Image (cartoon, rainbow, N blue to C red; front, side):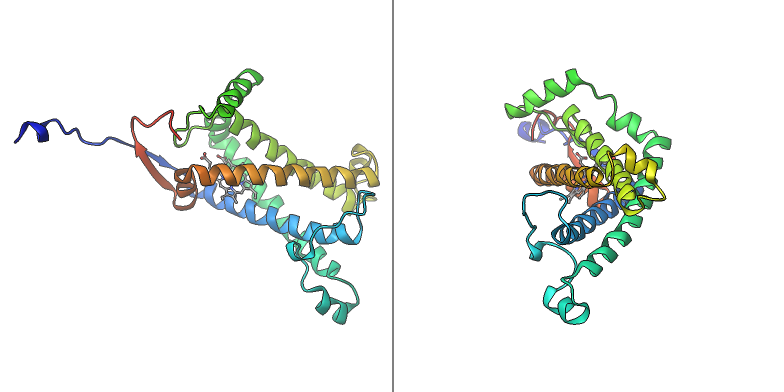
Length: 231
Ligand code: HEM
């Protein structure tokens, strides 16, 4: 064996696996959230919660072609949008509950998404702003953890404020908790805005670190064992 060959060391790989249940619940959550937002935009256009005369682009909303629905039922897709919204609501509620139960009982939340506190958040946020935040497969930094908890909280607020708007008589206590029917609609709108902001940042980061996306889709991704601190 030549001296050059003798110096070559075998490449050591870190393998990261994403359990099937996490992948299924993640993508079903994403689907349900997109359906709820798309249909919510059509509902908002029909009955705006804010007084600014602002409307979402119809092409980006869910509820069918307004020309067709005008001909069929004399409205611009509200009935379709409501059907999508309530259908996706059950998907989100059940699937999100499965995700939360898995996260708690498997130890996934404790292991991977905790602890998270203001000191770690500020440290990692400053490092990210300087482009110096390390990323290792399967290890979430404090900013990611805070964002994940934030979006979970936003989903809970959306489900509860939605219930308060949908059934203000049966869930009058919930409606009251959100400041009454009209204010619950504003909270619902603000929650949607927060989730939209999360999605924009989240998708951009997933595309920046495609190995995480690979693992979230196929369940497995590898990186060189010494690869830490690099994007
Ligand atoms: C639309 C609503 C979405 C929500 C609410 C959401 C939420 C989340 C949450 C809570 C996690 C952490 C999962 C855990 O470890 O328990 C996560 C991880 C992840 N999500 Fe999403 N997600 C959404 C959409 C997307 C989309 C569209 C993409 C892809 C383009 C994506 C790609 C990923 C990836 C790659 C990870 C793993 C990140 C890592 O391991 O560093 N997500 N998402």
